[in-house]
Each structure stands twice: as structure tokens, then as C-alpha cells.
Length: 414
Length: 120
Image (cartoon, rainbow over all chains, first blue to last red; front, side, top):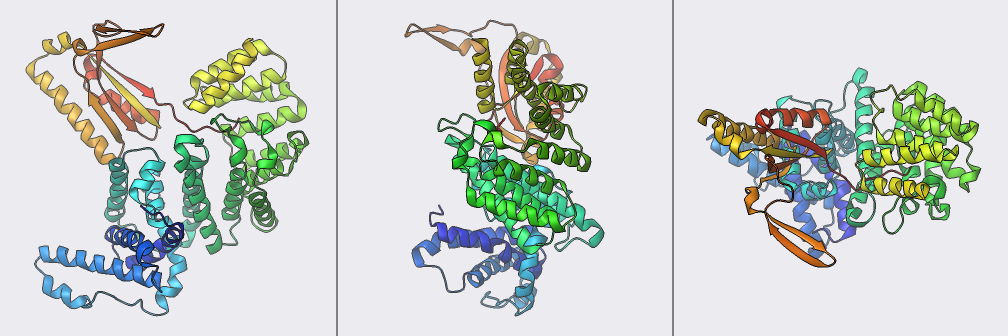
């Protein structure tokens, strides 16, 4: 429906600001959110035809406010208290924002909304859906198609999340200081999940899922603007940019995956790489170290190599050691083992993988077997590599990965 | 993750259940479907007609052959499916455990393939 890209960008940028104004006026997140969605829809239909109003933000606030007061009126009517409410509501419904207060608060609103949508009391699927709708300004149907679920399912997830916010009386505002760091970590994790959902989607029928990466970058950029001194926010934005820079090179036109070592590096996005490297370099030099910054630093080392052979694997090994200390987890060990193999040979990497065989979290995971297959192939043990490729191909639930692993296996079986 | 719950059933066995037991199978399935709708985990699902209504299609050397009846003859057959998306395989197994047909026959939990892939 939204065909005008300029209108769409404007609406998406204004959405959290308008919602923030309404939530602060009425204190009802769920009803305000519905009202803002209706106002956005009215604008998306009307503006491309009639032109963008002189003060688009004011227009949206006025329309959303009118929906809100209509809704409050009818609710109150049900409770037979129309007269009292009518007195509280200005006759024309077009309340001009109180000067000063709302303008100042608008920047904090985006953050406060993110903290609300990413509240730990909500399930991850709800956090993601609500963030994209309330902060990202996406429609339920857009979110549903990005996540390949029926619209009714996505609508229910959003409805449920809003009910939960109401029932748990989650407040709108910045979390108090002792919790703020933990709460910000949840926000960043949700943004990271949105990014990954889009990034890991291949081309073809899922093209629109790629919009999720753009949306995650846009939201993270907004958070970075609001919290410029936070190293992990900068680190996450850098990680997204550096990873997304490889988008054009990571799949073939038919959707087949291209491993990092075989990618055409001329097709990497140099602007994203430059921005990502600047961000992570600045963050590392002044903020406390965190996992996103280290992952971004690893991505930066890859990005700096003109050819795969020029990769500074020793530096990557050193960074993985830091990362494992900061946030130990078997998937990091897996990637660490690849880097170790590149520096000290495939046997050293294979030895490291053995430590994961007893780890329930990855022992049956296809990635462990896929990495083992690659290292065995590197070591020249083609018979064992073939077995591992086949096992990995059976275990993965990703079609492009299965296709890639089957191709590797077929090459060795010849 | 998305999972397909494949619900297996045996008509002779179903008939042998008491009326209360048969009623409970229907009711319990409804309860779970409502719960999954409410939680936003249900993506879809349908029941299948009796296997005797099946047409099996085979094409060999470009020549189609259509026969009546299922591809595989079995006492237990697929009676329906339920498509869900949930946070973990444990949750999917929990749903399958409570699916009434699992008490008498079986419910298979099969992960769906997806188009996402990470560079290796």
C-alpha cells in the first residue's frame, strides 16, 4: 500500500515520536499504539495523493489524538460517563502539543518505547514484533510477511504482548539506573535478532525479509544517536554494517551460499565497511570492552583483507580469545577453532572441536559437523570429511545450507 | 523454529475407545488449538479425510498412473497436521505430548526447512 518511499521513510521516523506523545498524554500504551497505527495508515493512504502536510508530525499527533479521544469516549460511554469525559476532551480534538515538554521528550521517547517493547517480561517473539510495530512503524501485515507467518498469528502476538504490558503494569519511561545496563542489553539483543532474521535470509522469494536488516540498522542507528557514548551500541551498529556490507557477495544469483573465502570482495559495500570500522575503532578506544565490539572488530579484520589469503588470522585468534573470556559460548568456540586452524593448521582446529563433542548445546548441531568437515578436508582426510559433510547436511534445517553441504560432499565423493 | 506436528491415528482403535474417551480426544485437541492460537504459536493446521479417499499419482517415463488408496498401506495413518512456531524443540515436544492422539497412537514433531542460511 505504501508506494511512496519518501512518505514511508518519514512515517517510520515519526511513528515512535507520535506514539511517545500519546503514551505520555494518556498513559495507555495499547490504545495509543492502535491510534497511532490508524493515523499512520491514514497518512500512508492520503499523503501520496494530497501531498505531505506542512507539519507532518503535528498532523499525525492530531489525527492519532482524535482516534484516541474517540476511543476513550466510546469506552467511557459504555460506562455511562460520557459527560464527564467530554468535558476533559477539547472540542475539536486537535490538541497542540504543550510547548517545550513534548519537544524535549521526543528523543527520550524512542528509547523509552524500546525499553517498553523489549521488556524482559515479554517472550522474544513478542519483543521483536512489538518493536517493529511500535518503534519501527511497520504494519502487522508487513511484519507477518517478513517472518513468514500468517497475519492473524502476528496480530495475536502483538495483541498478547500489549495485554501483558497492561497486565504487568510495565511503566513507560527510562528504566532506573541499576537496571538500565541490563535492560539495554535486552534491547540490543532484540535488534540483533531482527538483523539476523533478515541477514540470514537468502535472495529470491524472501527478498522482503532482507528489509529487516535495513530496519535493524535504522533502529540501532537511532539508539546510537541517542546514546553516542555507549560502546556496545556502537559495537552492534558496526557489527551490523560490517556484516551487511557482504550482502551482495554472499549468495549467487540462484540463491546458493558463497563461503567467505570465495566471495568477490569487489562486491562488498565499501561505505558500510568504512563506517563500521570507524565506529568500532572509536568505541574500542574509549568505551569499556563488550562482546559486540569484539565481534565487530573480528568482522573489521575480515573486511580489511583485500583477498581471503591476506586475512590476519593471528589477530582474529587473539580477538576470539578475548570474546570467549567476555561471553563464553560453544558457537564462539566453533568460530575460534576455524581461526586456530588457519593459523596453526587444521589438526589444531580439529583438536579444539573435540572439546565441543561433550557439550550438549552443540554436540548435535549441524554447524559443529560442518566446521569439522571443512577442517578434515583441509587436512586431506577426504573420507572422514565426506562423512561429516553428509551428517551436517542431514542435520541442518536450512535449505541453502543443505544444498551447499551436499555440493561439498558430492565433490569429495567423486 | 517452525515445526509440523504430524498426527497419526488408527480408525479401528478410535472406534474401540469408549464414548467418553472419544469425546476427550476431540475436546483436548480443541483446547490445545485454542491455547496455541492465543499464544501466537499456531500457524495453521487441517484434518485429513480418511485414506480411502486418497488418489496416489505416479509418473514414470512421463506417463502418469493414478491409483486409489494411499502410497503406503498402514494400520496407522496421517489424520491431520498442525503447523506451529515456538521458542524451542522442548516446547514443541510438550505440545505433542499433550496432543490426545499421542496417548493412543503417535505424533511426530518435524522441524521445517527454511530459506535462511549463514555463510560457512
